[in-house]
Image (cartoon, rainbow, N blue to C red; front, top):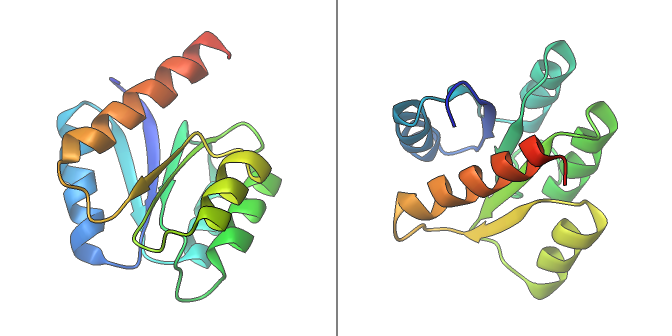
Length: 128
């Protein structure tokens, strides 16, 4: 995971900070943003290997945000981390938007997120 660039988008500053701390410890370059519009501005200015995002956003519908992320960078890997879980959202996020993983909040163990990021980065590196 060394030197992977990750954008974390979540309205909760405590969650952003916890994710940032864990991923930096793993050697990742982490950028955090608290809202979707700010995240889209960042994505337009530079590329990331992975976006980790909630789908409950204060400024844009989360599923709409995922579509817009794809419009900006169709190759970025997306991991959705949310407490708002319905089977319809899971299906849409994984199948229609092409997210690499969908994790439920609260995470019982941050290692679950680290494992998901490692899987996504291996997939990206292998080109599959």
